[in-house]
Image 1 (tube, one colour):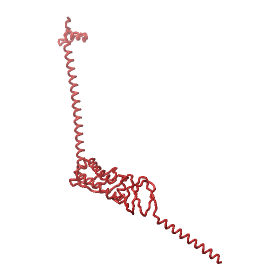
Image 2 (cartoon, rainbow, N blue to C red):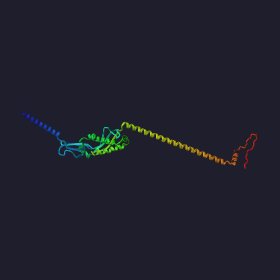
Image 3 (tube, rainbow, N blue to C red):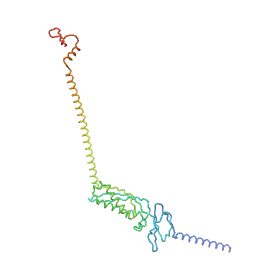
Image 4 (cartoon, helix red, strand yellow):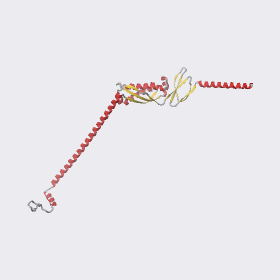
Length: 287
């Protein structure tokens, strides 16, 4: 019995020791600082030193792939470098004649990979927050500055020039902070009064063009009728001249001898009857 008790006590001690070792190893595993970060394709990771004399954002950009680091002293921040599309909430800008236009912009851009450390050093925020703060303010300022140099009617009549100037400002202001402008889609809505004026102006232009087309068509039809009448008159004149010329020629050809021959050809052998009751010869002597 004593031997069994000693054996049982030894087994329990070993079991407790193994359990303690496992717990210690598990705790070490949980608290150990070394880990890794997978930087996916289309992204860039930057290493941030949390301690030491060189703490801060390193100037070295971490390439894509698996990166091992000490989580106690280092932090990895990942930035996407593929094209981002941001649909902003609409805002209102004012033209130089105090007309208010509603703008609903949608921006496509991507991050300059070589400037990712500078972006994080300057803003110290995730990309989603930068989009809704710095980038939105940059877009709003571009529209505000350009709108203040246009009158309300020139915004709509010079839409391409208006948006080209906005694109120039955005390209310059975004690129210097590491953001590459790709495309901007802006739905610009004029005030209701201006929209009504534009509709009325367009309706007036359409009516004028329609009236001009109708006048041109009527003028063309009138010219056709005049040309037709002139042609018919000329045709009648030609026919009349031809008929008169034919009559003149016939009259010139009727000589006394020709008339006598025609009379002989048409005579049926009887003499015409006079009122006295006798037959008399009206035959003209043929010479």
